[in-house]
Length: 259
Length: 315
Image 1 (cartoon, rainbow over the protein chains, first blue to last red):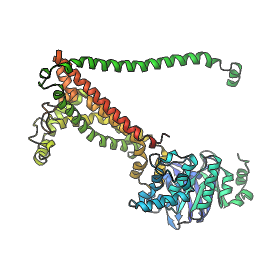
Image 2 (image 1 turned 180 degrees about the horizontal axis):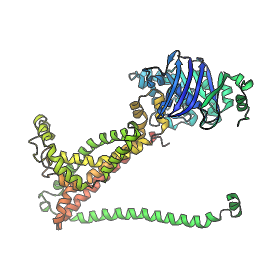
Image 3 (image 1 turned 45 degrees about the vertical axis):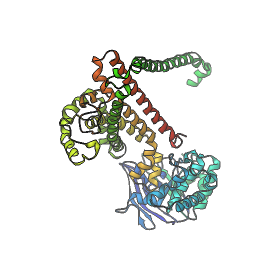
Image 4 (image 1 turned 180 degrees about the vertical axis):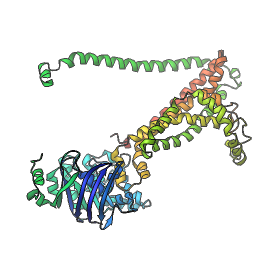
């Protein structure tokens, strides 16, 4: 289930523009890793290279290696579609498919990879995924209602249920709480703590309290100025990043003395 | 600077000029709304009053001698057949072209293709009619012969095929080309408006590009696609010149590759100049029927769109 990620000397380009420069890092399985840093520092871009979602933007490409348990995601003949079914993603704004019911939303990814799923198996998978996302009790009576009728926080948990229904090895979260109220945020953070027993979780966040609450290790990204590439400044256990940072930039950022 | 000004005269500008503008604008838009209703009512009233003599006249005085229903029935069927052929061809082609422009073609190709499609809409219908009658119809004769020989057992391809090619099928094909830009440009517009979020949601689950289109683009665009089809259907039902020029009309027959059949709009156009008295009233009654058909089509379209409302993402 859960796999380790090793990134070696990764450069990410948008056309001619070098967006992220020379990132190397090892992410342990069954852990939560947080990416923090100022806006535009390339942390989201880097996150997206972990499941090749950056390729959706025309002209974007990456050089270097991203190894998932030793298999290079950028190797010859590797289909990004396969990569994305192994590395799931939750986005900044909740994005359940508006035309699908809650049940169909959970099954959306499964039906892509495994068209024939018996209705009994589908029921079980819907229940286990929604339970896994702490949403089952709230929606079990209205599985046939549209997913867009839920509250923002519920929608985001529905998206997490949809991601874990595919049984990926890694779950990437791109600022999953930035559009949510504090109570929904707490629910998502609790959920992250629960799912890390089964998955490798990587989360981008602007909220440093959140990073310190949910993550085991934290990576700080920074950018020297506009037009310059983002770089990985420091990557260490979360307690070290926040209490005993080794780099001056990190210390300035986590203590709020930035810029 | 601006803060000091607004502090000196709080809200002065808004209360005088702003409110006068508001009332002028609301008056104008109300007038425009009333005008639409007035025009619609006037047209409906004209059709009804002018058509009345037809409904009152004895059956044997109506063209064909067996009453208005007997006269109008083949025309309704002909109108619907032509429109259905056009939609059957134009809908899949139009949607595929729109998808190609919005999601497959590189930017360098998609722009010119889009312009060409829009250009199709700018060609006057009489030119389509002339082209259909002189170029397309003769070119289709071999195909019709083949259809009659090999698929003649199907009633719609019953032979012998027309040797001029001026048949219902030709008229339908010309109509299809005419309504193609309506479907394509509206669908393209809607496809490009699909929220990136939904497209990425599908891709992040491991969807291929086609699966992404099926999961996020098409469901999002469905009401828009239906609207575009209904608009196109409206044009196909009412199109006059192209059908009048292309179709060699005649009594109602099942075969689409023989000359025969007629649509309401072409029937009115071809006969109107020489019509007077009861005949004129008949043609106007036929117009009333066409009006009602279009109205029903639009209402069905609204009903279909409303059914998907809950799942449209608007909530």
